[in-house]
Amino acid sequence: MKIGSNYLGNGCCTFTLWAPFLREVAVQIVSPQKRLIPMEPQGKGYWKAKSQDIYPGTLYFYQLNGDILRPDPASESQPHGVHQASEVINHSKMNWNDAGWLGVPLESMIIYELHVGTFTPEGTFAAIIPRLSELYELGVNAIEIMPVAQFPGDRNWGYDGVYPYAVQTSYGGPEGFKQLIDAAHQQGIAIILDVVYNHFGPEGNYTSEYAPYFTETYNTPWGSAINYDDAHSDGVRNYFIENALHWLQNYHIDALRLDAIHAIYDLGAKHILQEMAEEFAAVGNYLGRQVYLIAESDLNDVRVIRNSQQGGYGIDAQWSDDFHHCIHALLTKEQRGYYRDFGTSEQLVKAYQESFVYSWQYSFFRQRNHGSDASHDSGDKFVVCLQNHDQIGNRVLGERLSNLVSFAALKLAAGALLLTPNIPLIFMGEEYGEESPFLYFVNHTDPDLVEAVRKGRKKEFAAFHLEGEYLDPQNPDTLLKSKLHWEKRQEGKHKVLRKFYQQLIKLRRTIPALKNLSKQNLNAYCLEQDKLIFLHRWSDHSQVFCLMNFNDQDVSFTATLPEENWQKILDSADAKWMGSGVTLPANILSQQVLTINAHSLAVYQTGITI
Image: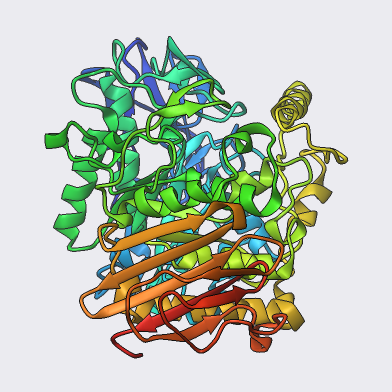
């Protein structure tokens, strides 16, 4: 059931609302001319009205029980904020130029996560468009955009959205978003939209006045859970499934990143994620495009990506935080919070071999066994990263990896990421070593809510006991401090690091052994005491051998590798990468004694030559 306003053309518009317990509902037009349009019950709690002389730009509320006025919960535009009238949108007026666009294969994606408000000085969709060509030149072919659903004020990460169908006005609204997506497709870049189906933000959320969108059966970090399996949940499920299809059909989105699905609770026979995946794939097939659902989950649960015949949900891929935690703990030696479960080379080896480090082993942080075995699931089922909005922004000072480790370690980390047999995600600015923080920021209007947010963030930081001055999320300067210094990408070490990322992506795309994301064509092992990790990958006649030194000292060792003539194709210690000078030879053989620089990596190849 399509809900919300639906402009049909020639001044004709329908309005559909799910409100099963209201006795009377009407559409209150407030602009351009006030009038009241009664809605008729349709069964199963739905109400509908069809009216003439309703044109795009018309502003309206729903009138509930002949009295209270509220915005449309499925509003597609809130031009005057979360508490004001909703706007009728005409999706057919967009002149798309992507008729031949088929999408980007999941296994080929190099994902670049960005926040619209901090990626450019302007903080708009339009300002991103001129940068698309540089991202494509870097090797990026998929951009993951943090949530754009309408949130209160003009500063927010996006996870406080309260109108999942609407596009944030301060970013450029619906038309601005479409223009960005269209431009990205013409550049050869897919767009992944981060969506939040586990909670609504606290300000401007009127959904509970319409219907039982929440259940007290479960609790989430944000309060009562979304009602996906309790009484009257069918309308809730329809609301979110229709939302996923809305982005696919009206905005030509290529994939959705589903936020924190571990806070989506459903004990019904068909999980909401399975139903959503089936509907999403069906519409994608009808449109003839490659479309995907990617889940964020901290459960390490393979059921997320297994198909329904295997008892799974059929989601195309999921995030694996274990990889990030391995790299971060090895390089920074931090042991606070969840990092206490990580810090060994053996764990990174397991992350390469199996994607999940915790596959039903005891977690000291969680104080219980955690995870499942993903060793037989191909690498294109997992998204891994060195940095993302959560891992940076949930630190007191919002420090990036560039603030915590050396330049040599940044190159080592880049190689560890881009040589993995999983889908890599780069956080905006990471590719050139951006040093500005990424902090948490909001722009609420309720003083009590602002104070609650401040206290909540301090409580979250307490688990890490990190020292530093807490920056007020409500202060406008907090967002300004989080803006990228994009100009740095052409300066000194920043320019070199960007070229290093570019070269790694080129190797990943052109060498068959690196293109093949099967974990069966891989062998990884380590020398734990020396913090050396060895990664051997192959595909047919193409082979790659990678040496990684996570030690802050040079290390000598005896190489044990297949009997081949290995030729070096990349060494992060090379002077061209502002390294300390190479110690590894151009060619190596098995059982040869070698010395590798501190915090460096080298890549050797045999077989097919690029």
